[in-house]
Length: 162
Image (cartoon, rainbow, N blue to C red; front, side, top):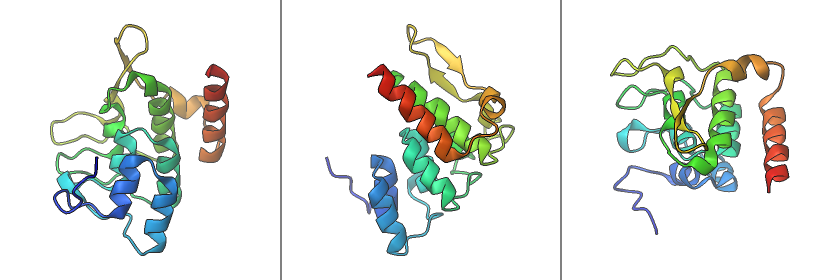
């Protein structure tokens, strides 16, 4: 189903981030799209890639200089969006994205307009749909790995499961 980009104030960059289309993101940047351009609700491309759990896009956007602390209209940073998509099948992606953001310097203590800390993101656990808090243990556990190494580790583990 096609998205009406005008209604959402989306450009090609936002659509590519939402869909997880890394070549589309790269093409949009080559065409001169602004990484910090705001879409509906003041979401950036990084907010959209995080909320849809597209770690390759998140990693690429961070490497290109996307603002990891950009607030949306509710004051949510991209790290707040880690737990917004309740897809149980993508728990590993959520953990990887949280790690990528924290390693890039995202502030876990940043509060949104409701006073919720960014590090308090909730994600569904694969065990019975119970909640699992994501914590900064990833920052310590993977502190010496680059985003590319984290992505490679994630893909290796994912391929072993399938």
